[in-house]
Every structure is written in C-alpha cells, then in structure tokens.
Image 1 (tube, rainbow, N blue to C red):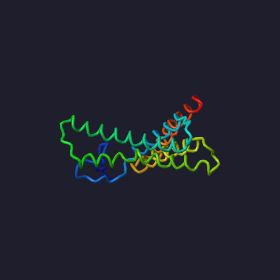
Image 2: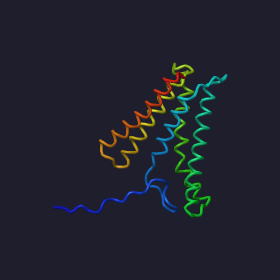
Image 3: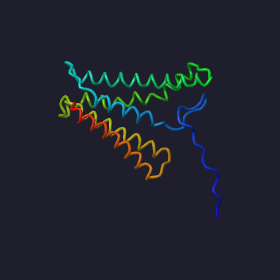
Image 4: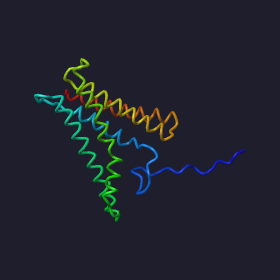
Length: 175
C-alpha cells in the first residue's frame, strides 16, 4: 500500500512573480478576449461605407483598450498594495494579458473573409468563430491544467452557454 504524497502546489492566478517564468499558458485572457470579441460583434451594427473594415477596427481597438485596462488595473493593484512597480513588471503583465488582444484576430479575419466564403456583409461567421474559439480556449485550458474529463466538458459547456447568450442577445436586438 502506498501513502499518497503531498498535493501538488498550484500557482496563484495571474502573471508569475518577478524572476519566475510561466510554465504554462494562462488561457483566461484568451477566453475573456474571445467573449469580448463575440460581444463586440453582437452589439455592432456598423452602417459605415466600409462595414467590414469598421468592424475589424472595432474588434482590434476594443481588444487593445481592454488589454490596457487589465494591465493598468493589475499595476494599480500592486501599487495600492504598497509594492513598487517597475517598467519590467508592467511589460510582464502586458505580455501575460496579451491574449485578450490576440483573441480578436480570428474573428477579425472571419469578418474580412466572410464575403469570399459566401457569408456576405453580415457578422454571423465572425460571431461563430468568436464563440467557437472561446469554447476551445476554455476546454484546452482546463485540459492543460490537468482537469478531469468531466471538468473539461463542464468548462466547454459553460463557455458554450455564455457564447449562446451573446448570440441570443444579438438575435433579440435584431442586429
């Protein structure tokens, strides 16, 4: 009979501390960024002369603004906790939060490619891409974190429901 050893230590959420390299990708930013992109697409009703370009710019700018807000909030939190904040720490936090911006890339490409794929000027393809990547990032993150199969399925299901709520809101508003 073997005696179980101590439980493995888990790193606290957020970016690794100074001088510590992240061993794993943190998928939370990618999930959040995907949900943000889906929300931007669902809420948009761009009536510009170039609606696809306007939506792509809206996705990128929104991702950048939310990324900057996350970096600022983290840095401000460190400062309020009495910690000195260095430029190096700001860069580290910025890299850690960058998936928020990256998550806009595939939906933006879907917006640009939609007419070539027969989807016309509407944003449904981009919305589907955003929701699918949200589910994929959540599922992959749970898998890589060592979650049990049930937990992985639950992560995917919760994120699918959240994505479908965004889709339902778009349908209800009539965009």
